[in-house]
Length: 243
Image 1 (cartoon, rainbow, N blue to C red):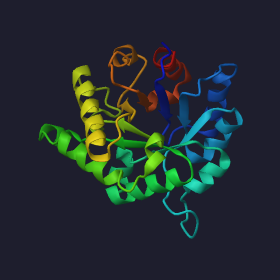
Image 2: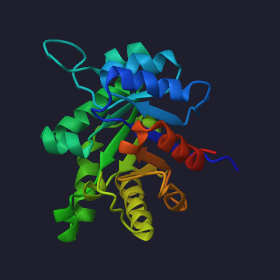
Image 3: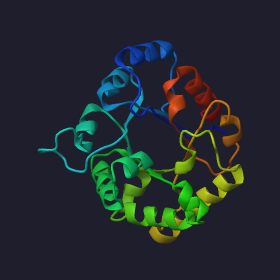
Image 4: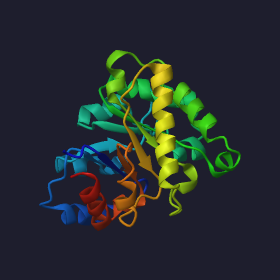
């Protein structure tokens, strides 16, 4: 059976123009599956679009246009040929104090312009230690996914990223990831009556652990952070997850 997992590379605010040029040279001649999405800094998006890769934005603003210096709208991204948008990443929630209300507005705007939404949810270490993971995930899901209608759900992907795992090389146990993803799917089914939501895992995904992570039965793919900036590492992850 064909493996339909999705692999998304979130390059974050990394790499200079020369690094991007070298990165693309390393990928030259390698045909990436359409199930592989690269999310570079917004200024580098055209470089990847020119190579016909599936491209996503790391963030969007919920207004279509106007006096919002420094922001990029879903409509602008869609007009360029961008197909995916990360929304609600823990770094946006934490560093930029994005609320669930902000995130919900971004999701609605992204869907309005035909983007595939990748909603990031996850608990901090403090919340985990206080046994609040389920409560936090439920709050995020119910608030972030309000006001979706009809076919909107066919264009939403959830990425479970425990905040304490991002960039730390500390991963939850495979059984814990499986159970948490099952919980997320259950919340969406119970409260939104949608039974087929794809859920990715993200948080210190690397070429060293991808074989193990890929064995988790209910994982729909992976959101890769730092490893996506290294072509060799990223290609290894893709090789394992997208066959």
